[in-house]
Length: 310
Length: 310
Image (cartoon, rainbow over all chains, first blue to last red; front, top):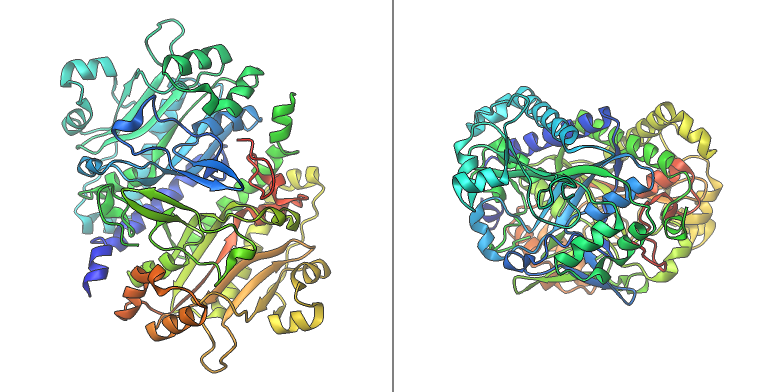
């Protein structure tokens, strides 16, 4: 085997991709059993997720292309499209949504960042954060049980002792996490747990709903894997009223012009309450297989700060 | 219902997306039952499908972004990555692969072109064209039967009388088609058939295998839908020997430098014989639902020559 392929091919690739296949298949089985409709991804658009008021400290910028005399952004996440799809009468949707996020090269050391990845992004009309969190717990348990049962041989070859978590997963607020472990709580808390756990209430993007009864608190939630694997999923109840959305966009210092087609629908009162989340596929495969770095599960590595061979 | 959403939302969207969900689910069921492993898509790369020596008459050019000081192409198809994945020991693979092809605006009138779409792209080590064509016939029959059974109500609402084809589908060569219907045979022949049919032997991209016993003939195949829906799928046995690949690239007037990482593997003798195909998801949904234009099945239309709302 020559150097060029050795550079490309991760160790135990076939076992890893078998586990990935079981993960993907069990996600589709679970979501369709629960009555979700599957949309196709959107790759280019007039708007995309801003990823926070100023993601410049971790990403190089929003990727854009020119087409037919206009500029289109590549999808950083489909959050705004999910809200609009629900407003179109698609009450329970999911999408295998590839995202491009041009992560700066230092992110290589986190072991969990890729500059392109896929999230299973879902959204439910009228849902509460509790109902989404319960659904996600069922999903994670179902997928890991199928992997453990159908891919026992592969897990053994990888030396991975996969534990099936019990419902409900522990829940903390971000305030508790920061108090206990400091601002960089994610990796530390993840290492100290042996079960996935929830962290709620983050001040972040404008579309995550602020608690109307407790201003400055947020009805959003991240699922964190144990054993140092860190963030698995991120989700929230959504803002849907124009005056809330525009006030959040303005408070974040974002330019409303960049969200105009989406804001037009909000202005006309066409958005509806919803909640949802996105779970990273590569991170789930990484966690399930116990690989050292997330790039180690990819036939074609997409790790920031590394050479791109093919 | 206000104008902005009327512009966005296709008629009978919920019925169409229910049929799409059944199509996607039955594809996953079929492919995993047949032992295929699922890879994640590649969105950005150092190389992509050239789409032919000179696609300039129909597309604006290959989309590219800058990242970390280098230029990356967006995926026009994953053909070269499929060949390399098979060379890595992944013998039977499939990918739900989103492609960006910057189609010129006149393509709107074909009713079947989008500037972004997803193909279910698969590749099998050591396969022959006959075995791939037989597999595709089984797949198409299986998917359409499931749609007809599980979505009878939606089909009725759409007024779509979906016929289940029988195996084997008729086969013609491109030479026969051109002789009978002229150079623009695809739409005419499609309209005159009431069953999907195969057309084989096209002179096209360098990676499609030239018949070693009949130079100037090619071991590739397109599946054409009946009733005017046109091309469904495109596939081939592949070239894998360096001297064949480089001679084809050179004959096409392409610059070998643009394919160097792929050519390096071929040069080292690491590529292996394979065959495969890609079937367009949106075209399959369009055909199954009987929509007027392929854009009519999309919540977020991506039709060349049209406004992009969101």
